[in-house]
Length: 107
Image 1: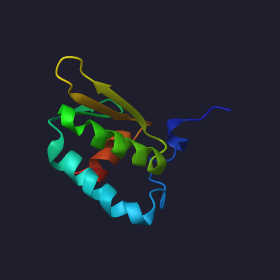
Image 2: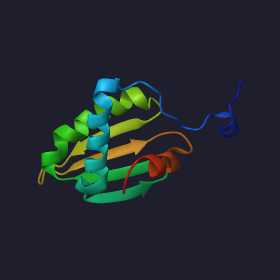
Image 3: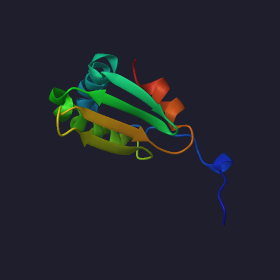
Image 4: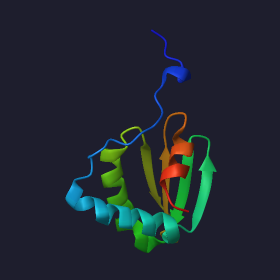
């Protein structure tokens, strides 16, 4: 059976995937990472790549740990530069992922 892109549901979060007691801290982390800490944002065909300073590594890893529960359609790649330690986070996924990220992430 062949599936077309038209039959693929739009990317969406899983409600309640992040426990209620942790949600406020997660949303604060998202606001800080993508509303100010990201040094660069680059559009990809099916998502975005963000660059952060080396000091943001643990926060980026925490973001990924939470978001992979909430948004199972996303592919996450973390790359740490050997020379400068810059952290690059690539968020990609199916058709509509870039538009989803534009709507959900500050900045």
